[in-house]
Image (cartoon, rainbow, N blue to C red; front, top):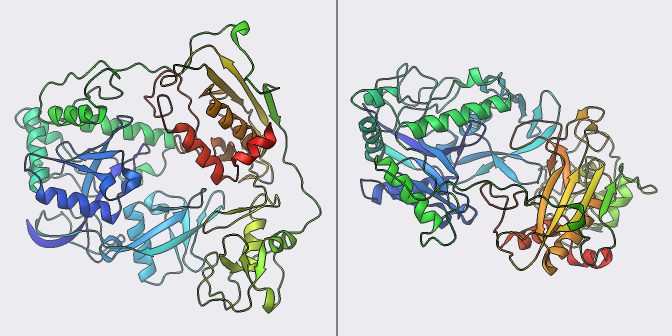
Length: 572
């Protein structure tokens, strides 16, 4: 044992076998719960700190995260890092995703980036960490070495992760915070009272010597004896993961989850308890986890059955949607808009700014009072009077050349979207491939909507070749899982949502071409931020019914794409 200080980062295991960090605020909340909770274990409601995490509860006894509305269970872990590393100093490294929001890097990647940044390196190759990316510190971008796709990155100040002091296990091959290529590498196993309790429970469940010996720690170092190991399931080293496909990584993650559960937390059927049950699903789920972690028998309910499709329907029973004169909509190739240059389009939405404020342009991160930081092709010189513009509706200010470059990098459809607040100027269109959308009424009711029939939507998009508006023009794209069946209640509100979905389909905003978040496959047709219900008679996947807020959520997502209820009136 070694008396030392370290920062604690709490992480959860995603479906790709990667440990994703919770925010510093959430980690502080969990640490506070550990200090104040009963030594026999406790739970942490994450929504108390972050409203976006309101469905989630962490069970400290079994070291699992539980989602109340779907019953999904994921392993969590508590890891230590050098106080001088990025999490200890309060620096967050994030990359910009397709939705325009910022996603944090895995912690070991963020530590490597911060270490290279502090050494004033011009770039960093992430290949040794298993990622085919190059970090360009000068332009603050991430470049995919295979596709050459470029994304913005940012270094953001936040509160530091919680600091703990006391006896820590000495890792083999070096002391606490030993330098090396990754400053702040994993110090060693957690030795807190709560983790030792979980370890003892698992050891007792596995028999004398057997269960404890099977538990391994997740790090780059050799395995240690059971007396100094942490309650983490085994994973291959990062170097051995680099050559694996995403489906293979998913299988490893699933195997690891099963390993964690088998070592002391038996699987319990906690999803979607019968509506007639007096026990709330969240309470039943947490109860099941706690009981199973203590090796007590659990029998809450029979596992529910997945019902993806409705009962068979004859052609004579299929009817048009009331108020609609058609039952099918097709899209073809991208509509070409002619007559306006990118500069003319951008100027249409801008107001002149005589005296730019003393702040940075959030596109190029250079001062608005100076020249644009964009040096690429397709943007001509501008006069000093036109160098900065204010977007008419939202008021955000940018370099004119930066806005033109951003427009050239999009669909060039005559619309512009503010990169700060996402206000849309003009009519936004997407890059959805050609396909067909069918819709009709079937004589069955959805759970939660017993008083009406069901609208069934069938999307069908064939594979093809990417066009100039797609990530890799000229390269084939796949279309997995088509035709895709989706469902809405045949109510007045459900028909309103259908009308707006038809507008989104015509504007090519329902689907896109990119990388699947579930399989990791690139150059494939994916959903485009407008959620659909693909599960007819159950809600085991979170994509089914009942879901009282679904229609309101879809309307909000469509509004974010620039589609409002006024467009539904035009659609009529």
